Length: 63
Image (tube, rainbow, N blue to C red):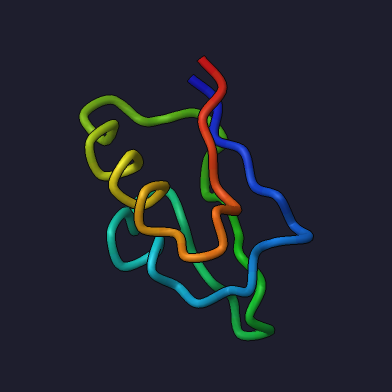
């Protein structure tokens, strides 16, 4: 599965980073960085939680 980010919606709040730090990082400029665009083994639940918790609905999964 591939993680997607709508850069027009993302505001860099960092909720995703707090829920799945292996996948998401907000850099010093406040921009979201995907550490990987594929869901790592064993991280699907955390990634799904981060997607559901995104207040701007900027995150998604392509299956």
